[in-house]
Length: 271
Ligand SMILES: [Zn+2]
Ligand SMILES: [Zn+2]
Image (cartoon, rainbow, N blue to C red; front, side, top):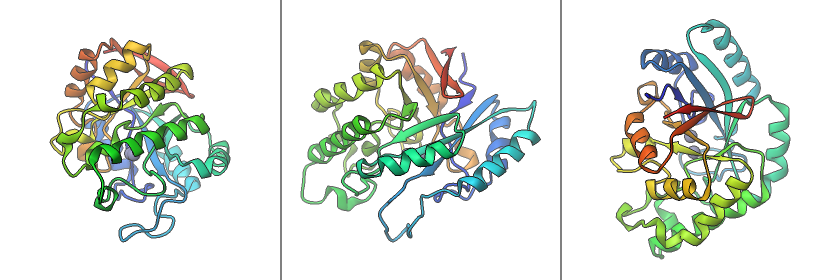
């Protein structure tokens, strides 16, 4: 069955997108989706850099909520809209993140590890003076630390996010980190959480979604059943990007269903 829901996308309510919500919704309808979830960025204490002034990834959630509710009314009967968030995890902001989530009725929460020790692997400086494997290990260790401290999310965002930005992506072999990846996956499974199958990597010519097929297969083998599909689109044209390819990847990894969410609870659909 074709995937008809995109559960990871951003609009102008995220610091790094200029797309109005309505343009994202119109594009989703044109692409034949019947359900989408906005997952705007909320990264508290994101380091200040040349592209991002202070507070760049901090959302005005009141404005987001207001815009969302108007759209929901406007598009009633045309597409099912959900109010979500992509929350940046860091060990020292557990309380701030918890307080933030308690203020808004999010229907779906992606927990994402965008920073390791306050640095984003997006930037080349992250890799200077060390091997790719050392950088990747630090990234997974930081993910593990985050999910040990923080539990209020539904799926872990783009588990091997760092691979998108490695100086040489061919350096990546997830099996070199199977010890720590297993720990991450086992925690998610024991807490009934899932994985975001993120297709943004296909946009840059990579062969796997994030996480890669090997990690998806391992998740399934260990008992994980909750996956959502997300394009991580920041522009209307990228919505549902290469979803058929991601569906084939999930099938090959062993999955027979995928999820949407209603009030933080997974709803299963045939793949
Ligand atoms: Zn992200
Ligand atoms: Zn995202």
